[in-house]
Amino acid sequence: MAAISLIANGLCKPEGPICLEDGSWVVTEMGAGCLTWINENGSLRRRIAVTGRPNGIALDCDGALWVAESRFPSLLRVSLNGEVDEVSVGSDELDFLWPNDLCIGPDGALYITDSGVLLNDFEGKGLPSEKRAKKIDGRIFRFDIENGRCECLTRGLRFANGIAFDASNAFVYVSETLTGNIYRYRFYGSGGLGSRELFANVMSRPISEWDKIAGPDGMAFDENGMLYVCVLEQGDVTIVDPNGDILERVPLVGNFPTNIAFGGGDRSFAIVTEVQRGELLKIQVGARGLPLNRTAESTNT
Image (cartoon, rainbow, N blue to C red; front, side, top):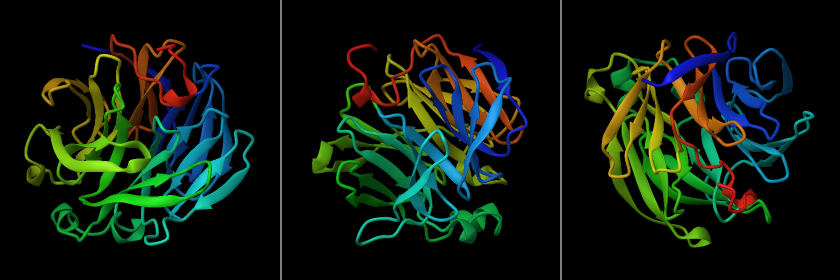
């Protein structure tokens, strides 16, 4: 059983954890509408910026935070001293609806999931069965940091959520919350994505049996090819092996883990944001994680 310890609590619907070079953290607090810096042991924190309802975060090699803003659908660039710039509201053909999570790909571009429904049309409205029946058009966007061009690469997902590249950079993986599925697409760089393939389903029982919205959220890979998936309402981090089989479920006290990232100088542990209890947790998983921004790394893996 993985050892779990508390870094910080009292957070208001935390998401999007990022580890900085000095070992400190940045998380989003969706309920408070802000980005929050937390020192390594959780004893200090400060508000970086208020944006609305920030969701996922990516960190580029220049130290800038890229933020998926879901209340005012947009992609933001935020400095650690609190300067906020809106850089995109979608592609020429499609506006963002619910930018959710994002990561920097091996080509240096941002890959952004859009859940495919407006926040106000989904959150807190209707029974879970009614929400699962809604017309939802989840998408994956690519944003070129160098030239500012945004394009939609694929669509039709049932609430696109977490996103991660594997160690080989051959595939990008996306979680589909309303089905429990994890899909993958072969990655062709600026040439786009291949067809969608079902990789795994992370639910312990059929999605229709849940009386609340349940399903996979944020994800991260370790160096051994294991995929760590935060599963909403199931209250665990489900570990999936390279064949798509469930290897282990790491249960948490809270039932709403939203995202995961690896931290420490050698990325030797995982950190998880958990909404129900408002916590930032450290999990010793016995493996080293992949760096979030591999374009900023050399061979130091």
